[in-house]
Structures are given as C-alpha cells and as structure tokens.
Amino acid sequence: MTEDKVENSLFDLAALQRKGGLATGDILAVDPRLYEKFMIYNSRRVKRDKATCNLIFLTGLSAYTSDPINTFLRGESSLGKTYITVNVLKPFPVDDVWFLGSLSPTALVHDKGYLVDKNGDPILIVSKPEKGAMQEEKEAYFQYIEKLRDAHYVVDLSGKILVFLEAPNIKTFNMLRPILSHDVKEISYKFTDKTAKGRLQTQHVVIRDWSATVFSSTSEEFVNDLATRSFTFTPENTEAKIKDANILTGSKAAFPWKFEDNQDFMLLQGYIKTFKDKMKEIKSIIPYADKFAEQFPSKFPRAMRDFTHLLALIQVKTLFHYAQRPVLIRKIKYEVVVPDPDLPTTQEDTQLYVLATREDYDSVIDLWNQIRETTETSAAAHIIRFFHEVVEEEALRKAQSNRDKLFDYTLTIKELTDSWNKKFPDKKSSDTIRKWVDFLCEIGFMTKEPNISDKRENLLRVIKNKNGNCTQNDFSAIFTLESFKAWLNEARTITASNQILLRKDILSDQEASPEEIYSQFYLNDLSKNAVICSSDSQASSSESGKEKAESKEIVQFPNLKESEKNE
Image 1 (cartoon, rainbow, N blue to C red):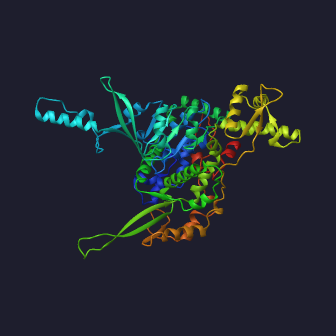
Image 2 (cartoon, helix red, strand yellow):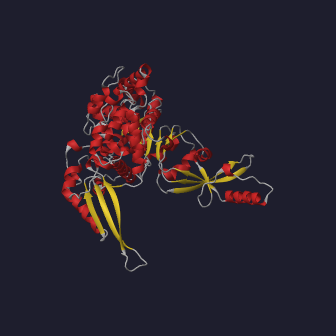
Image 3 (tube, helix red, strand yellow):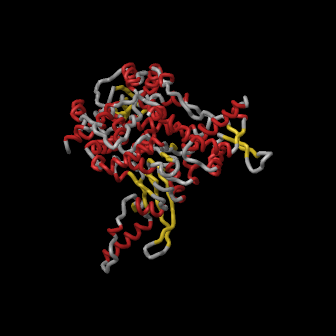
C-alpha cells in the first residue's frame, strides 16, 4: 500500500480506533459518515445516477435482513443498468451475488441447488458406492439408491442477491414468483429432467427463503407481475451523464491503476461481511411505524405493498448504522420447571433491538420521492418524462390559448410527436409516441377516443393525475416526544413481566431517558439528517486531490432531482 493511497483514503482509521469498543472488523461502524462514503466510493465508478446507486445498494444490503427488497430497473438499452448494478454490488461477497441470464428451472437447480435426503442431510454424488460383489458393498449401494428415491434438491436463497442480467425464463419466473412476493418461505416445485442415460425423470426441488433481487433487464410480459413486488426505477438518461460516463471511460484507459481495488475497497468489503454477520443477532424496530402508517396515502390497493417496501428500506438503513442508533433492551422473565426445589424457577432472556431514527425516515422518504412515480406506474422514466414535459405542457399550452380547461382539451399523436421532436435531440417516430401514449392510457394518465372527423386517428385527453402514495417529509408532524413516550409505554405494558430499557447506542452500558433519546435522534435538526447520496463530482481526465474534496463534501439530505439540475 502506497502512502498516496493511505493519505487519500476516505477513512481515518486512527480516529475511528480512538472511539474504542469495537473489534477490528467493526471499526467502520462508528464512522458517522459511513453511508455517505460508500456512495462517494460508488461515484468514482458510476457517474451521476445517485438514486439508482442508493436503491441498488440498499437492495443488496437487504439480502441479510428479514425482509429483502426487489428492484426492477426499466428503460431503454445502453442506460448502464447492468454496469451500475455490477459496480455497486462489487464490495459484496462474491458467493452471495448470483448474476443470472435467461436460465431455465433445470439450469437454476443444477447450477445453484444441492441434493439432500428426506432428513435434509446433503447427498454427495461423489460418495456413491460401487455395486461390488461383497455383501457389505451391495448393502451400501442399495442403501444409497434407496436414499436417492426420497431425495430432493434445495436452492437456498437466504442471504443471496439475484441479479437477472437478461429477462428470466418464464418458467423460472413463475417458480420464483411466490418468493418475490414473500408469500411463503419455502416452496416445492417439480419438473421433468433427463438422466445421464437420456431417460426422463421427475425432479423435486425446494426453494428456500427469500433473496434480494435486481432485474436489470426484463421483457414486457413480466411488467405487471413485477410492478407490485418491487421498486421500479430508470437510470438517468441525460447529456450530462453521457459526457461524464465517457470522460470516466477515458480516464480508465489513461490511468488504469487509479481504478484498482485499494485500501478503501477492502475496508468497505470488510464492513459488508461484518454487517452480514451482525444481522444474525441484531433486530430493528421502527417506533414511528404506526404513525407513519396513519398518514401514508391509502387510496390505491398497491399502497399496502408500497408501505411494506418502505418499511423494509427504513429497516435496512437502520441496521446499516447499527452502532450509531439508539437501542432498546428487552429483558423477559419466564418460569421454568426445575428438578431441584432449591434451584430458581425464574430465568431471564435479553433481546436487543436497534431503533430506527429520524435520519432513517428522512433519507428513505427522500429516495421514495425520486422513485415513487415510476414504482407506482411501472413506467420507464422516459415515458413519465414524456407525460410531464410534453403531454401536460402541450395540453396546458392549448388550453391557455383557447381559455379552456386543461383536462378538457384533446391532443393528437402528430401534435405530441412534433412537440417531443422540437424539444429533445433524440427524435422519435409517431409509432414510438403512439406506444408511449397507449401505455399512459393503460395506467390511467390519459384516455383516447375515436376522432369522428378523421377515423385514422384518436383524440387524446389528459386525465388529472392522481397524486398516488406521496408522503410528507415533515417527520415532526407524525412523531412527537409524546408519541415516542406513548409507544414506549405500550411496549412496556404488552407483557407485564417485560423490563424495557433505552440506551444511546450498542456500546453504551448506561440507561437513557426517553427525553434524551428523542432529543438526540428524533428532533428536527438538519445537522442530524442522513445523507442519502453524495454530490456528483465533475469527472475529468485529471482528478488529483479529488478524493479529499469528496470526503469533505456533505450534502445534508438533498432533493436528488434539484441537486442534479443545479449541477
């Protein structure tokens, strides 16, 4: 390791070590800007696309929690969907990230499954005994054959991140659908396979647990099924991004050693492994979840799944900062039967929960505001852009010129095609615009009716946009000190024998009052807000000193769209 690399590191290990209390593998956990530094590191390899990087990163982390996330990246080809996914997930353990093509159920089972007997014990094909002449050899052989009759394959998805680089085989998708929905933790599936001798036989496979899933490419036949099971987003498609990406590619060609794995990468990689291990023993609680549910818009059925997905994001963000969040200690007393009357009949169990804070809520809502519309409609970003910047503006222009109501005026495909081509450099044909309009009609943003005077075209009308499941950013409006105390009191009264204590963090051994916890973690103080993403740096062929500048730059809870406009 050269001096330069250490000097330009995002982490001051000496300062972190002075905080004490953590093992070497946990040392990054106490860095207050840990999440931001992950995003800064990503920005060195992925230009712009802040929201996409955040969404993929949180999706990857969720694989190690009790409620993994599904993400569906939509959009035209060459947007960098696969590139972003591969680079953001690079620090994750190689064995945990499955990059999958259009694989069949058979391929999934043979590539990722293992054979077990009826008791769940693995069967090793290499240990198959020979059918010898000796009685013992015959018995061992037939016992093995008998074991195979009740055997089945297991594909264990726990702690895995499935990345579909191509649209999955429809049979594979149907097999995984209950897993994506988190309907059941284990499903049984049978398919026909060929033996080594070419004979057909029925194979039994059990798919176990839930994985985090990223679809970086898919076909339209999966859109409706994926829509309510995942977050949907489209990477940025702007001239600024294309320019930055090209400069980055040029920099890689000119200075390849700048992009080699360095100390920061190894530290980030180490933290992901530590995080994975910690999730086996740490749980999270969202004290304001019920208040959040009360104010979350519930006009449409999909709001139930959207709300569940948002809670999953908040939990991931909370657990990622497990060493920097307040904790709730729950001591449970219970009676046990003992053989000796002199032994105590009461025992105590201790459970630890990390509490979600205002930072976690604010950062997730900020991200949700960027992905909400594409998630709710399952539309690619360019179609949403077409609706807001062409359809609505054209309808408004015509309405103003005719002093008419915006939503009563009709449009035509020709008008919308001409309007798009005047405004944007990437010209579109009327057929493409017609497909976009058809999609907008399907999701309820527009309607069409025959043109009586010209049967070759339809008259299009804008439907007033339903606001959808938009939610407010003002945390203080939903969770006050009184709300926090009420939640704590209810938690204490659920079981009379419970003893519940609060501490400021996982390292503290002193009890904290509700007022102390609320003041530090839930008050409206911008200096405590989470950093959902770091500022983009302008890519250039020479980036001397850039790492230092990046590590000092903090964006306090930005609006992602606005920050990109300003750049």
